[in-house]
Amino acid sequence: MPLGERIAYSGKWNSNVPACVSCHGPNGVGVAPSFSMLMGQNKDYLINQLNAWKNDQRPPGVLGTMVTISKALSEEEIEAVAEYFSSQGGSL
Image (cartoon, rainbow, N blue to C red):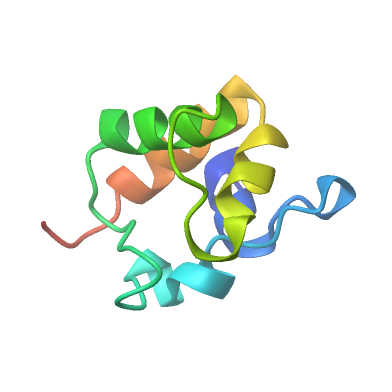
């Protein structure tokens, strides 16, 4: 299973990163209003948002979880997750 898909569905438990779909819903469809849609989102947008949380340049959001999650992901992992969700169906 490719890295991005593995993180999306299984997380990275050795670093306390839950599966993306555990909050963002099946296939990353989103759970409004708190958890945005990831499926079909622009890859660069996803990378920029994750890096903004990682670098404390974006408010923490619901429960502050995305700051913790993004800081536990490497640049390679951020790229892989963004690539995975951007390649999934759906359109925004």
